[in-house]
Amino acid sequence: DDVLGPNKWETFLTDELPGLLDEGRPEVVAPLDHNGSWGVMGVSMGAASALHLTNRYPEMFDAAGGISGAYSTLDELGYQYARLTTDARGGDVTKMWGPRGSQEWREHDTTADPSGLAGKSVYLSAANGLVGSTELGYFGSDSMLLVDGHVLEKGSYESTRRLEAALATVPGVDLRLNYVSHGIHNWPV
Image (cartoon, rainbow, N blue to C red):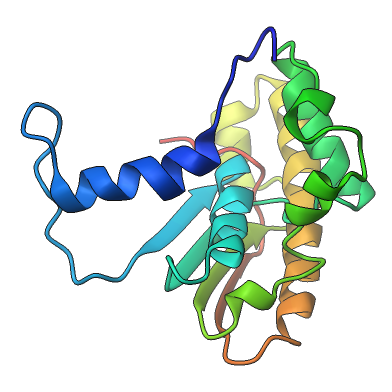
């Protein structure tokens, strides 16, 4: 993308980073001492990516977690999330995976085919978008943050419910769910 650049996060996370963590480079990072199992977790856009990576590379990851994600690229909600996120940063969504509905868009839709999550531990969480006293305390003076946060989180909640239903058809998924009774798409410290 002329504005967003040649980001290649998928190959960075699946091809480049694991070697750095396993072998280390003294000038950059020491080897990571771990038990050989990998998991990936993300929030918002990162949630969709975490579930996608685990689904697409099941031999690499044993577990995945997503907090407030949009897991379908094919449904209207998922497409609008991708489009709005790209547009808001001045980019062109068609430069990400080609025209809407292309093979690349289909390959990035975890809800349509979650079969790579068979036998995996999966954690999903989302709030229902309702504004509570916590949100009012943090964002009460900025009504646009409240509205945007409500819309995004309500969409994430619906998307998480759809992924939950799709995962019910996948054998061996150890699914843990945490639906929060109120909260918007924002995580103040």
